[in-house]
Image 1 (cartoon, rainbow, N blue to C red):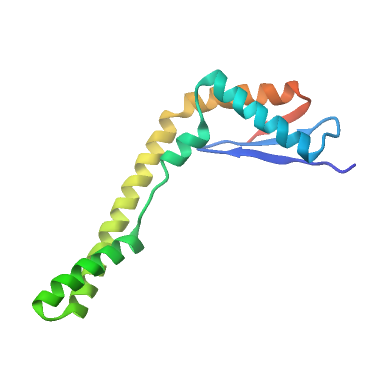
Image 2 (image 1 turned 120 degrees about the horizontal axis):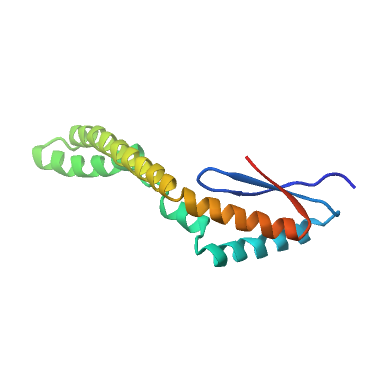
Length: 140
């Protein structure tokens, strides 16, 4: 039987790879992965998926441009040139949206740094569980 490895998780920093030592099937690996994730979450009180999902940056230049264009078109219509207003609004909105997304990314990076002790404890608990079930675990 060929070697089978599975990328387990990728959160803020670490990627965990799991390889069976005793010819476990893909279904067995998935089951062990799920059980060990839940056990690590229960043991540490930390859920990397929830922490990662809550910190995803939203919006950006495109979203800001669309909002800006709408506001600019409305303002331009009042002044007699909806097209010019929309163009100006789109430009201003794009810059504002980019700035907002950049700030969100910086906040996410800071949160990831603050979560490092919890993430390390989670990774250790998850790896220990998987190793006890007969898997080789490596983190990169």
